[in-house]
Amino acid sequence: EIVLTQSPASLSLSPGERATLSCRASQSVSNNLGWYQQKPGQAPRLLIYDASNRATGIPARFSGSGSGTDFTLTISSLEPEDFAVYYCQQRSDWPLTFGGGTKVEIK
Amino acid sequence: EVHLLDSGGGLEQPGGSLRLSCAASGFTFSTYAMTWVRQAPGKGLEWVSTIGPGGSDTYYADSVKGRFTISRDNSKNTLYFQMNSLRAEDTAIYYCAKALRQAIGRDFDSWGQGTLVTVSS
Image (cartoon, rainbow over all chains, first blue to last red):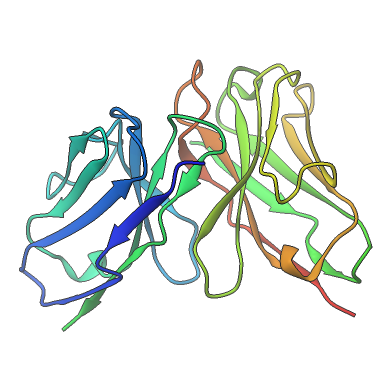
């Protein structure tokens, strides 16, 4: 099973600041990695697929990078609606796995 | 617009059974893989099961293999999840999710609102 380790577990930032979230895979997943955002009481929302492609309707302030085992989700300038939990997910092999999440909190 | 409506959750005793449903609309259901993902209270996301577009290809997490069965009725645009031999650790919100791409069913661009399954005596 491919284990995804997200860091940090939580991030305290102010609106307008840049957020950098990390996801590390226990073995190479090539570019087969996505990022999801989840707000309290809501279902997850796909932000990024194939490591760097924004999903439909996702603002340009969200960007993804990386390949192999190390990936980054960057939010260039935090908006109030961006404070949420973010998960990475690999689709390289079964079982599909999610990282443990990074909570982005308002400072 | 894609719409997924999860239902069927509730309170069940350990060892009991539940059947979840996910009614789909707004896309050609029969051409997309579908998946169940669950989230225990206060915890992260856990992939549970995926079914291919035709229904013949199925995949399960080890934690549910042999107890849960995923299926679909493409004539009714509905996904199902038969959950048997329920355990306390199955307590979670269960989300159905649609595959992003027709040919590859392993990432998810639309999600249901979730249905809560509670296993307790």
